[in-house]
Length: 353
Image 1 (spheres, rainbow, N blue to C red):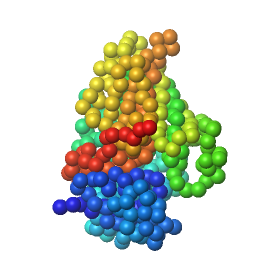
Image 2: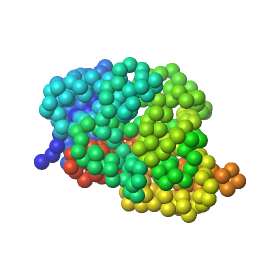
Image 3: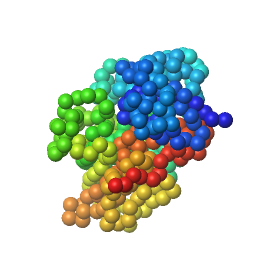
C-alpha cells in the first residue's frame, strides 16, 4: 500500500525539490500540496518540471489540510513551522513530519533567541543520518533516533556541508576545533524563491557577495551543536558564506590546525567512517569535489588534504543545497522514520552538463 504525503510551502524551491523527489518515490504518493499566496493555482503553473503532479491544486496551508497524511514535509519560512507542528500534534492523526525550516533544529533555546529571535519551538530529532556521535566508528546512533521518531528537523544546507567535511577529524581529535574556519560558495537558490532586489539576475550575475559575516550567520550554532555531538570540545568557528552566480550547489572549505603528530594516514583512517555511506563519497588523495556532478542528487563528496607548511587540514565538501542540503535529506530521514529503505527515492545520479 502506498503511503500518502503532503508538502507545505509547495510553491518554493525547497518544496518543489521535495515534490520532485517524492514524485519518483516507490512507496509514497503526494496527495496534497499547500502554499500561501499561490493557493488556488495548479502545481503545473509553478513546477512544470513535475508533470505527474501537475494537476494537483494548491490549497491554503492549514493544519486541517495537512492532517491525516503518513508524511508531511514543511518547506516553510523560518518561524512558521513551529505553530503548524504544534497544531498537527493536537490533531493527533498525522504520521511523520519533516521540517525543512530551522524552527526545531537547535536544542538550546538561548541560541535560538540569539540567532533567530522569538520563542523557541522545541527540538525535534535531527535529520542527518550521517551525523556522528562521540565514540562511534560509523554513524548509527542518529539512525536509531530517527527510526523511533515522528518529528524530524531537517538540517540547514550550509550546516550539512560543513558537518560532513570536518566531523570525522573533530570526532577523532585530530584537529584543534577551537580554531575552525569555514568558507562556503553558495548557489542563489539557497536564498529561496521570494522576490528580493539583490537576488535578481541583473544583480547576481557577474559578482560574488558575502553575507552573514562576522559570526552573524544563523547556521553557526547548528554546526557547533553537531560537532559537539560528534565529540568536539572548546569549539569555535569562523563562518563566511559567499553567494556565487550559480543556481544550485554548496562548496564548503573548512580549515583547522592539526594536532601535533597527525599525518595523512591518520586523516585517511578517520574518514573511513564514511566507507559504508552510499551518499557520502570520500575522494582519493589529490582529488577535490565540485558541485556540478552532484546537481539534483542527495549525495555529497568530501576531500581532505594537509598543508604541511601551515600545519592545517583542509577538508572540502560539495553538495546540492536543495538535494542533500534540504529535500533529499528530508526524504532520506523520513524513510528511516517510516520504516522504509533509507535510500528509497533519493536521487543518486546527477545532471550534466
